[in-house]
Image (tube, rainbow, N blue to C red):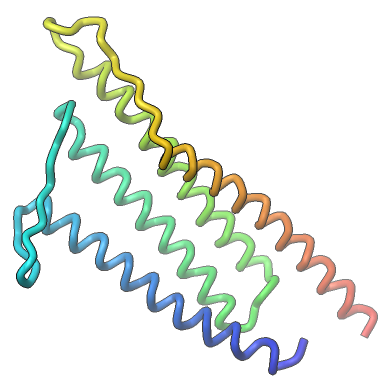
Length: 167
């Protein structure tokens, strides 16, 4: 593979990696500001709860899973920036990214159900609300698509290795 093809990809991966780090920091900063009722510059960030007393923990769990997923994405982008386009580490980090996103989507679906069961008091002993959010369904669908893309990357890596053997 020529350097002319690799250089734009490497540069884009390095830039995107910085952007993902900025997004991670922004998510953490905004979440912390909302939880601590702080003001960022001239914007007041609000955090509202609707439902169970476990919602702050569910939100924190979702943020943690998202940040871990984004960190795995930065690891993958770092490998691509080092010209390891189809290397095993790239595919491993990409799968890790997809896995953590999938865990986040499943957590956001299951955690409110568990919280509803745990939070059912004497006044509502048998009332558990099951809510299916289209965003959660889309996130699961997209992460499953990412796993398919990881398999395609594996196939591309094998083809790349075979092509190098012929040269």
